[in-house]
Length: 116
Length: 179
Image (cartoon, rainbow over all chains, first blue to last red; front, side, top):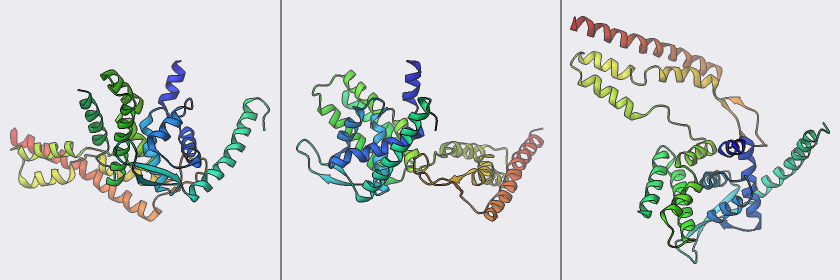
């Protein structure tokens, strides 16, 4: 329990690196707004420790050209920023996915005692 | 009361991000405000405890600011302008020193050894690491050329000596005058 709490307070570099691609992957199914992104990520256990930290990440991804944001009217309340994946973002995501699968399989192999 | 909780929260987030580039700051603050609006719209008539819970899930403003600094490469301010202003004010208000000495103290003492030590340590220790922390990270390179580094080093040595000598001289003169 204590271990789990410590783990959730400390956002590791690996965690940081992975979450950003999960945001890109969410946007593959179409554009959406920040609150919705956070809610869908939060549904995955251990993915989001503090909801607000996703917003600096969205700013970063937009600056990298991996996502684009546009203002859209919403049926409920004021207009919202909607985020959508760019072609550059799609390429980065595809590249990550290949690297991730290799990495994950390798790590699993080592953890399960198979070695390299 | 409940509106007050949200206002306080947003105020703290603004304070944590005062030194951010203006566009980044506005975007992050607006998005967090929008997030709070959406979260509260989901439960009309939310109690004070509900709102506190929603804000706790969003995270401490300091935590969001720290994440933004890491993600957007915004450095943490080294020392506050308020501390320096207070020191200079004390120096000039004091009757103990001449105008020339006060001038020396203003230019050299503020920031103390922090400035030269920073100059000395930061350039050689700082590496530019493209896409640091990501799986596709590039190789790290020093941020300045060796020549520039040497020059900065020499300047730092001069400043270190000056910052040690100035207060000593000022203190001695003060003692001589009060004795």
